[in-house]
Length: 79
Image 1 (tube, rainbow, N blue to C red):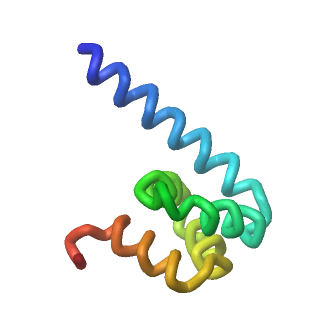
Image 2: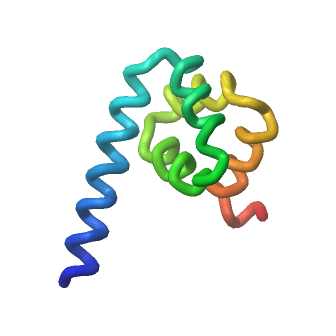
């Protein structure tokens, strides 16, 4: 039960981050995500929790190499 509760708290935090970053200018959010290269799996989870429009706007402003790595993490079946 503890694991399920921890997962729910983590998922709620991801949703909160997604909402926060969605409200930022894409260029600003992209700059933050670009600096998080040590934790791209978290970036991918946050982006996955966003709507497609916000996700696309931010990915489009990110460094292309970082955006490509994050996209691969978001879509593991393509690895």
